Image (cartoon, rainbow, N blue to C red; front, side):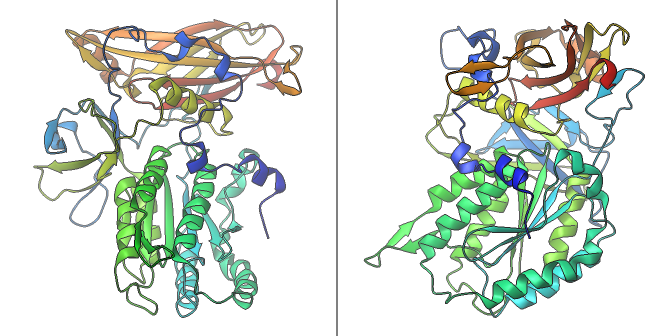
Length: 510
């Protein structure tokens, strides 16, 4: 079994290898420097710190999602210092029906993606059968298989997709209730794997490196899916402290921290099930348990003890249906890998909150390089991202020479500078033109460079409040070539690093 070859080739990238991304594809590297720099980038002194963005889960005493949370209900501290909440958005009820000749990246809501990883590389023969039975029971009990995907990580470090992430054109098939057929899908694969398993006395350092690289590869595929994603990692875990050839302990936690940071930057929350903490082969030193706890806390997920596969899947799916995006501007720290502990609390009674517990400040890339990497991810993804609302309208369908673009201002993170609130955006416009030849550099052929439109916004407090309250959008009108048959729009908020994207068919394609 396996994903189609085109899928595997197109998605063969690793979060660890690509973080930060320096090779910018689809001609983004050729953009003018001003297109990916802040308007005030020439000011003296260090660049302004980007907003810290958190995915916040709010539950009541019954474990039900809270849908009426307010920014005023929250208190946030960064390394013990109180922070002002500058961005607060619920991620439920944001759908928008597009009108005639309109296109929206929120017109077709879908179930958030939850990927289940059955980790046989770090599982033990005395618990893998138990895990298989628990996994089958958990999946058969799901009301729908939409948004659920299942992979096996073999003890050789490769993946076997049981129900893989979809291609864009196969999205309609994602609603198929494949979970009811999980036994005939899973059993033949596991029978073959179990019969070929070698002796399990593997070097723990090798398992650590191979596991992180493998999950990073899977994360590279998940990163193409916009918004928050969940990774339910069912595993025995890997220790972050391993012996070297002389028997001396080697601390691998710095690599673990970068791994967790790369997942968090891709908006992947890890729900780790420490499947053997009560069973055979348990890690008596608790080092593997600590690894799973660290990764889940860094990414805003949760960690579970053994026999909790069904609970982990159900809670991951629940958390993704109703959550809030919260942001604050932390003081610019020295980016030396220092850990910043985040605490989100509330004086509201009966409220249980879960978010990322902290972050590591790294200085691996400049702000411009990080923005180029984000734009590349957005441009290459086959999916539209609704994180920043986009609405496009073809002005005259009979002569589609103009496209009116509206950007949802309530999804932007504004920074207060004096008496005004400011933000800077980059709008990329990719035109698919049947008559325009591709650019050729030596042996490499690549598409035409996108049009880059820098947008600087400045609002009074009254204007900002009105824009947020009434949902007033930022509107731009662009002229199109007469032979354009599709436009891809990508907008990046430079204050937060978040982006929205939308594909718009033109003319006869509508």
